[in-house]
Amino acid sequence: MAKFNLGDSMKLNMPDSFKNLNLFASRGPVARLGLDIGTRYIKMSMVQSSSQGIQLSKYGFSATPVGAITEGTMNNPEAIGEAIWQILTHYNIKEKRVLCSLPGRAVIIRQVSIPGGLPEREVKQAAISEVERFLPFPLDEMEYTYHKLGEIVQGEVRQQSILFVASHKDAVQRRVEAARFAGLESIEIDVDPFVILRSVIESGLFEDPDTFSQTILLLDMGASATNVSIIHAGALRFTRIFAIGGDTLTHAIESGYDATYLEAEKLKMEKGVAVLDEEVMEIDDEMREIHGMISSHLDTLALEIRRSLAYYTSKYRGESVTRIVLTGGGSLLRGVGRFFEDDLGIPVTFSNPLQNVPYIGDGDIDHLARLVPFLGISVGLALRQAPQRVLARHTLDVSVEPNYEFGSTAQAGGAA
Image 1 (tube, rainbow, N blue to C red):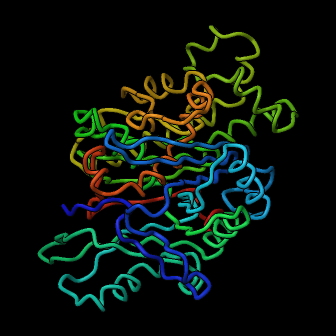
Image 2 (cartoon, rainbow, N blue to C red):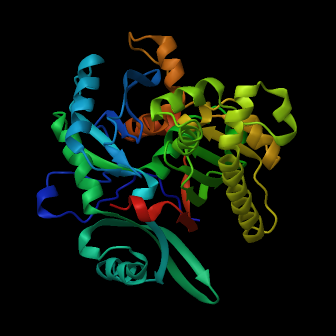
């Protein structure tokens, strides 16, 4: 199995207008500011390295302008840029060099196999030939990159495994435009499903190597989608993205009560609860009513996770997941950890991307503590820029297996 540090030397095929950008750049002390532009919230994290390790020096948080991102697609970069500028100003963040990322639903990730032993100049074209039929847009409309994962054997034939990552140019350019509207520069792009591993698994489990060496299901519940990844002994094997997120539940309440989105979101946070059917009569009337609005969506998500686990178990000869690590804003729903633990029969723990990244700034600690579930992506982005010599001492190492699989039920709407 080949080792591959997520974030290592990945460069997109860039049009002329992007020549000054360094997309999927290698790790190194380039940009300390991680920027996560989410459907509902914009998050920032800035880290610094010292003799004590990696520390969080600044953070920022704000609501995403209403309507600026719909179904995973950014359609108002200028409004997003204004919101980013306000965060920079309010939190007194002076750093101008930034790293941001694309959501999983906006990228196409494929593992393909090509003949082994090809000269380097032929590897790219062979990979393109294998993956082009899977792309939803013509190749010249997309940014793309590839990375060698290692050698695999199919029958008696040895082949080279390639990880191919692509996104529509518009998806990349809109994030670049938003950051530039805010006065940021040296813009780089990463990919959410890989970024979250850096903060939650590589860094978050650094002092828990026993869990790291097990088979972990990482459940990242965002606003518009939920990412499910399985990591075995530090190797990423499997990712699925489902079009069910926190907003799915909010919209169900919005429809059930004929309420506004903000009213429904408030109700979800105050009265929303995930419980098993046999526990429904134990909650109050309003909770029970809201539970009736959201339970089918939670059940559907749990069903999709069970299917993913069944597929994984069949492929890897009965190997089972030993722990679920839960992260993302959707994990704030009351009872959701216990719901998945009982439904799936697997212990659940909540991630903490700041577990081994102490905060040294002068902001409100209580406020920061409430934001922790939202910061996985922005912290992961910032961590990528820590010097490798520091990362080697303070993080673990997630690799990508040559037979890695990626799939998404949410991709068609978010690719551009």
